[in-house]
Image (cartoon, rainbow, N blue to C red):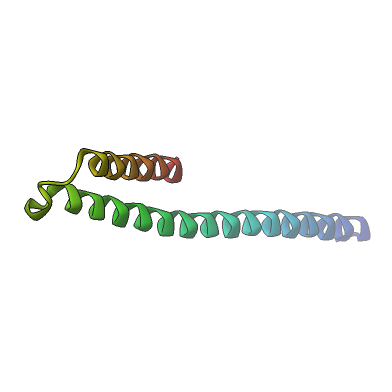
Length: 87
């Protein structure tokens, strides 16, 4: 193997190492985003669950229309957040 071939191999290895580092950084960033999205999805699901319990609970059948609108607005917000997180 000539000196020129060795230098070319080293340059190729350096480029591959740089590419690997960039790809690892991208994967790391993506995994953090997935973790963040999972937390958001859990929070939205809890909000939806609470809202459904409020509206569907027979003891609260006399829930005022104003309160029902608030609950439905919370549910709509949670659904919008979920859709943003899964896109």
